Length: 298
Ligand SMILES: [Zn+2]
Image 1 (tube, rainbow, N blue to C red):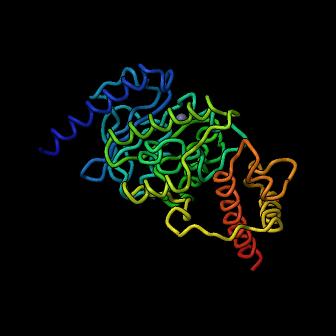
Image 2: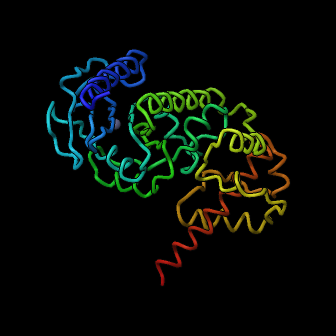
C-alpha cells in the first residue's frame, strides 16, 4: 500500500472509531481525542473543539515529526498527552484519550493504587491494558501533566488522569481503541462490585497469563519473580505504612485501624491474596520512597 492510500485509510479509521466511541457514550460533547503515527514520523490527530462523533477525514490535523501543523484544522489542545506517551513508548503507534464516565469515576476513588489503578479482575483487562497507572489531577493545559506521564518512563500503555480520563497507547489504532474500551468496562465492573468482596484473579492465575500470553505488568515485579514465602512482619508492614504516609502515597490502602497481618490476611473484604499484594506493593513503594529521600539529602 502506498503511503498516501495508507494515510487515507487511517484518516477514515480515526473518524470511524471516533464515531463509534461517541455514539456509545464513551466520550461526550467535544471531549476526547485520537492520534495515529504515520510512516514519515508525523502524525494525524483530531482537531481542537471537534466532537469524535462528527469528524471529517479531510480536516484532521496533520502534524510533522516535530509536532508542527502541516495541514487541516488546529490540533487538540491535549496534544502534549499524546506527545508524552509517544516520546516514552517507542512501540506506540496510536493513542486514544477519552472522558469516559466509569474510568473518570474510578480515578477519584480514595483507594486507587497509582501503579495499578485496577485489581486483576479479568484476563482480558490484563491482556489488553496490563496495569494502569494513575496520574494526579492537573488543571487543563498544565504542561506538568506531560511531565507526569513521562515520569512513568513508558512502562505503562494505559494511563488514567485523575478527575479527567484515560490515555491509552496501542501498536495500532484498533488496539488502542479496544484497550481503552476494556479499561472503561473494567472500571465499570470495579464500581459495580465495590464493597461486595469480589474474588479477583489470584497471583497464580495472573502468573499463568504472564507465562501463556506474555502479559507484561510493569508494576508487578512479583509476577515474574518467584513468590516470597517470607511474610513481612507486622513491624515491617507498619513501617511501610508510616513511610508511605509521610510520602503522601498509598496510605489509602491502609485501613484506619491497623490490625495484625494474620488478622488482616483473613479479614474480609480484602482477602489474603489481595492483602499480600498490597503489602508487597507497600514495601516496594516504601523502599523507593526511602531511596528518593536518601537521594534528596545526599
Ligand atoms: Zn481530556
